[in-house]
Image (cartoon, rainbow, N blue to C red; front, side, top):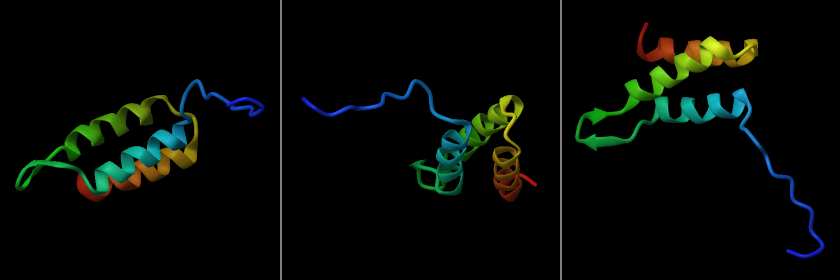
Length: 70
């Protein structure tokens, strides 16, 4: 679009990634009745826990993971 300036993001923030994962951990897609992919999203959330320095991100991810895998 001419005359408009758009900012292109290079990478999502850790918080954006965490919120995406939390949504899918809480409400995972099902590929067969009763079978969902929550475990996949929990594994991905654990990877973020290893790399993020943001304590808020760590706390919300840990709390969400604990809800399903105490």
